Length: 226
Image (cartoon, rainbow, N blue to C red; front, side, top):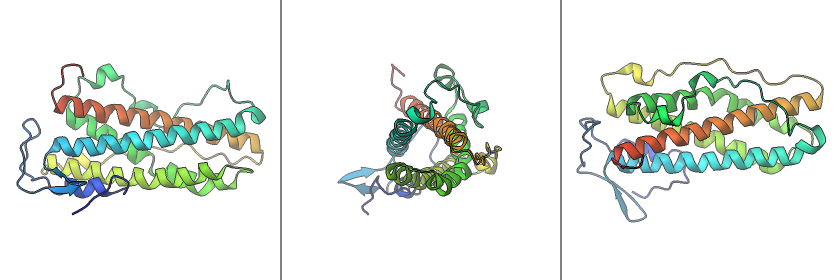
């Protein structure tokens, strides 16, 4: 079975090959594996590699989209020095030093909660950004790709939690956070600033997701310099 990291849900399929009897603290190999580019995926370490690679890819694309949006509008609308509003996910932020002390389950739940919190906002961004005057085509295509990949990653995190904690149904019941309302003003500058705020929050949150998954990978491999 050939799987590609460019497919949003490909690593979710890999997770389904992990036995329900794998222990979190003592990851064992499983007798079956999935092949991708000649490599056999047969451990949770492999799954974390895929999840981390995908989150890094999405994080980079979000940063590119934010930069493209900012470069296009900043000079005309003067928000280079604007203080951003509080993100709807601000309460979920934890310092990297504190993340290093957390258990795997806590960090995976935090990743899932962040991804879940962006499901609706990303859908709205995908529908609404095209209404802005002169919006770059690259921003539109990137937000669509990010939305698809982010949804795929959320499915993967839920699957991984179900594999690791099959008796704990609450592990995948991520809380729903109230979304910051999309800007409805008739003034173009107000709307553009509002979307800039949202994209900045998305950028910050995907950087957190990337950090948390890297911490999990580092702890799983028992690296000394985590």
